[in-house]
Image 1 (cartoon, helix red, strand yellow):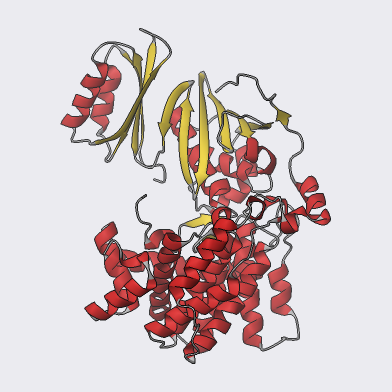
Image 2: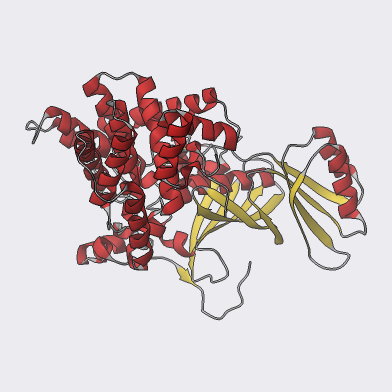
Length: 303
Length: 225
């Protein structure tokens, strides 16, 4: 059971051999490996979902301006704009993902899922999915359990940290978790869930982590919105049994390989990409503390 | 390979943004320092090093460290207002930035705290994901994570003291996970840091602190409680 989340293939095989659904095996793993009862896990996820929805509401109703000023109540503007570009549901999806992530950038309470940098994606997608399809909380929590299983495998085979694998590892993983959860909640089988994960990863591969001034704001906030949209587009494709061609495990391996070969300046160091643009550097100069005593190189330091 | 993550790590923790290493980890360091001091400080001199030195304001680490000193937990929504709350509660603070400190981890903060006559100095590192390490305490090497139950004993460097203390803990049914000893010099003061899997009873702490060769016994339970 310790090896359940080494690969998607192994996870599927275990489910089939033991005649269990995906979310049941996640509960069994947590019980055997971490000594947590089903009720404890359920209570944790139920609270997490509550905090996610709270973050969405906070972001849509309270003042959200970050210390740097780069984040300034964008979610509310999107939510209230008179023309939906696709549908009112799409508009709500995008504004909710933005809202929860803005709360994170503005020192509010969020759920790291899987990380703080990607903390708008599951709230935006799950909240909107529940609303459109009139799902109850139990179904959403089953989806979150599957999302956790997906993240456990990605962590094992690639990474969930921007500093290790770039943005694809954070928002890419969160989008993969969300799209798997969406497909499950809409009655998809194991192959369809995994196909959604594979498709999502294919769409998110290669994204670098290049935050302006090193802050979790630009482009992190808008990428939470786009990743949420991709989670839905992949779920739509996967539910129709459109094959991702490259199996999900190999997609995750590709993500790991790309992450490894990414240069350090694209891994949260704020030295490349958007952070290194003229404007990015000017913002950095303005918001970062400049009054620093620099110790000489060779001095024996205190400590 | 490190221990497998859990569902609780993949969907969680519930935390205050923007980043686990700049907020959650820093709050925890503040909570440890408050426990080492034994109460809320009257004054705090806070030095942010290296990567922290430039970004502590943008990431809110200044608010997070004060929140820890005020005994807020990592998911407390008041963290954002910690600068104002500290002022209201009469906690005087001052921030300083030091770069190029090559001996320190990129995300290091030093706290020099005063409460009445008592002064302590704690150095903390935020390792990522909210995990912390306290490399130094009052000039002694400490090296603990505060994720376990931690016992910090300052005592005279006498023969047999480590055997004696571990015996007392074993009799209280405590399993020692890690232990580190450092001293200022031979026959001088020594600092013993013991991380245990479970807590100790108050009477054990009292007993140890009444030994004539023991100067101080600090007990820090799991830092999130």
